Length: 484
Ligand code: NAD
Image (cartoon, rainbow, N blue to C red; front, side, top):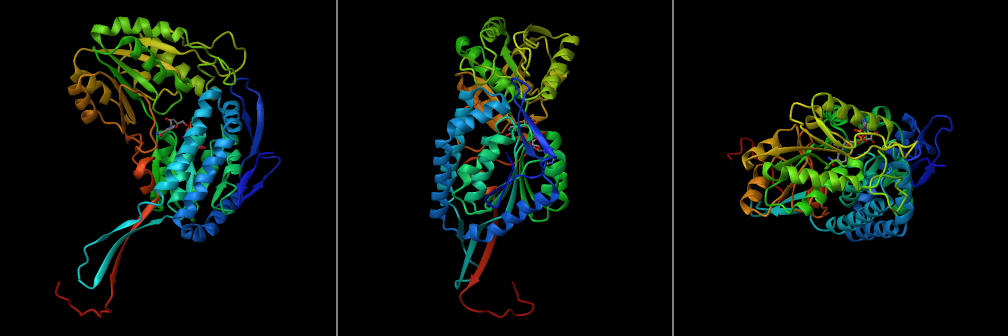
């Protein structure tokens, strides 16, 4: 039975008050997790608080060894974790094997980075002094992740938080909590209490976690709506908050693009994980001179993508994660069609599956920036195609969004590339290689997508506070009215 993981032990929680976890490919309940109480939440935070003073003092080399050990255990359990991820989240198994591989790589990366940068020595005001800028952990950090990449987005918080000397309380999404709880096997080598996992609803338990007086920092990935509430709550108590929120990423395809490559690349960026990627391509802008051929090829390619349960090796696109998510996307598609959009492919629930939250990959044209399908985040397999005549127009359209997470471009024209990465307001710019990952590079958004950065050196700095130490080797009494 799945429970919370507190102070190195499984805590079953109430047998009555439990949250059902469903397989989105079959709609069957696969297991349950406790709907955590405030008392259980407090135990988890107190466990992390108790573990903090010792954990922060663990020497860097030893911390690194422990984080590498987590990575090694994750690699051993890769297939088991990937199976759980597929059963609860719907993503194809091989993509989940990739996800666990990246999670292990993230722990290895921060194991080493944690040993590196501890501050700097600056010029003192007196010759007898040392002036030190040092970095310290915050204390207990709340790590809250969504369901689309549950383990990856948890690792982007937990690995740097631990490497920086913090202890953590993780609250996974109630849609996909099982894989996160299963991580406890990999965390087994850590001193008890350094990592704690507590399950429950976002609105109730998640909010209570953020409000808890012993939480010093909140690292959150999720929707703009939840992010806004969290930012307000954290601001009331001046808690450090790190937000990675929604996106509406543009993809610009220029006239020199290789159409065979561009068709596949854009389809991959739009339909990967049934379009439930924060950096999914959700607005496609194609140069007018190639738009017709691109669109024809794009539709033909989309028709070849195979929908199915994530455990089937032939599946390209799994089910969406839940009925409410599918319904929201269907409403956006229907509204766009009623406003004049042309539905070139998809948009329906496939007849082949009587159960499961499947939605056909959908291609739309005749859409514009007045429609919700172009303005709001569409967390599903939808590709709205628009055209542009000049590169100025392409940049203007790419920037015409409340969001600023990522942006993709296909061109080999160096002048356009330079303009694109300088002028498009987004945290990640992909030129000719959509949605590639690199742990060493910072990831995050601008505008309504939030502000902080995960991964890279920036990713560990988020979890460190800065302190300035003035140290004089001579003891000095101060003169009143000291002339500066
Ligand atoms: P969500 O905001 O509903 O939930 C995310 C997490 O926050 C869950 O664990 C949930 O239980 C918790 N939560 C919800 N409301 C809360 C509250 N008021 N207080 C505290 N915790 C709360 O998002 P979701 O549906 O799980 O995930 C999809 C969203 O996540 C999309 O908008 C997507 O773009 C975004 N996302 C962003 C990134 C990124 O890096 N920018 C990555 C992945 C997903």
